Image (cartoon, rainbow, N blue to C red; front, top):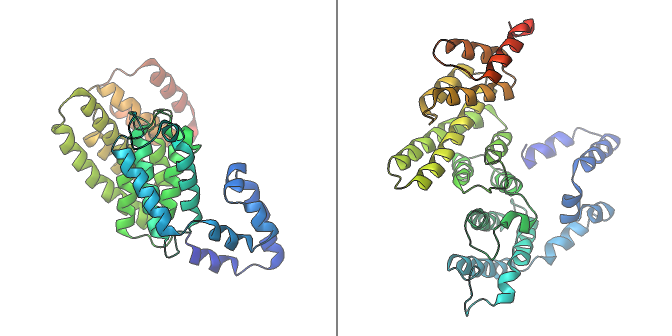
Length: 323
């Protein structure tokens, strides 16, 4: 829901109803978020919101500092001894990033500097994603050091990007970020789940399928030109997760057959049983049991399913509710 839509919706309620809504929303906000955004102080004194905004540095000064930091990261000054960044400063990089993350998020996306703040958050996100896979800072656990998971960070970015308008370019930008290297301490598909959860309308879902398919075509081209096993592995994993995402969105649109057909044509896996197992897992995860049984039976004479799938098939076919 956009801010303008929110204002329209809450205008229908009286004070008592608004109090109930605020209390319920307050219960759902994590302790960390309450502290990060000083929500308790804001509730006690609504003027605190303005005071908090004034605490943020002049944006141009903040921007220059962050750009310099990013340039130093790209030059390798935060991963090895050098004369530009001291050892103490290299070791305390996370405190800088925590401050940048907090101050940039304090700049509301719909304000004058909001879009630029979002772009800086994206650039920091990209470096943290790289740094979680290869040495870019003095330690590897970049998102843990920040205290914000990669999926949570991506969710913040996506919500900021889509906060004002839901343009095609904005959606493409969100999809492009799905190509970043995934934090090995998280499930790599987690970012795709966040992406799907932010698709609020049918139109957004359909556009997402279109743009994801374009992305998959690009990834297939990259896979053909991959030069070594590691590169092929990374591209294949990303490609397959994009395909899974397309399948899931199709299923949310009640177009399961289209999703399955696209999966069979585009998911990269040489072992047919493994490929089918992954698809059946997805259908079960989405609680599409009738479709699960139908898909299983279509290949029952061609694939020697593992015992766990055979047992599950027996279990599902016993339940009359699937027919």
